[in-house]
Length: 273
Image (cartoon, rainbow, N blue to C red; front, side, top):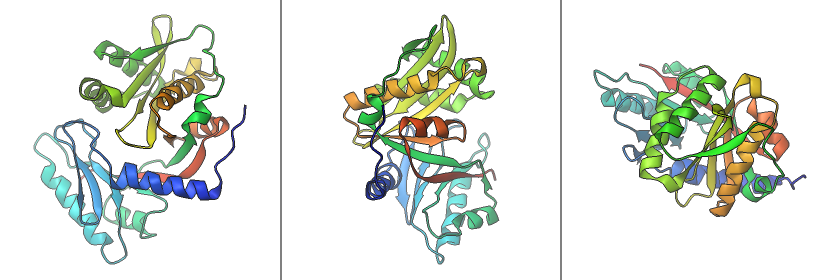
């Protein structure tokens, strides 16, 4: 089954909507977080060691960029404490201004991480894809701490790293805002082999797909596709028109084959004091 691609005008409209809703007017990703617009920057600040701190959106030019960068460094340095390093992320998109903002961030001491491709698709298109679970795989919706721990086991096998911040974020959403998250596991018997989540901020036109890592020995069997389709069907039931993914180089080809289209590229620039 194929879906009609968005034309250039629709992509432009969706990009503007994405910037407005998920960046400029972003809501906090947890009850403890504070999102605020300060001057030409929108940032999130979270107490404690495990929350995401960073700049989500900016409206800069050649005259104010360096001063705004310095102001954010000062803000997060003040936010740091004896038990918390000065670390935060500036999410830079390829259509942000000024054109040399990445160079300015590097000059200020930020370190770029691997780029990610921002992909979008119409929810209805992806929800309509015919997908059956691979043999030996069942889906399990996560609703409690035991399920989250299984997700972390799946992520550890898939990515080779521990993700305590992700664990706390998922637990917090399940406790405080259960309608805004759909977390799901692919199980081979009693063994978690893949995990993913979808975040659905209230009032947003976009459901964000996150995770989706699969244990190496289970790759290539359609599990990733299965988890994407499941989440799309949930988003369709909620009336959310678009799906959005910050895709790695590994997941981008799979998603494009499913019908996702490129909205842009984002690079996380990290300041570690």
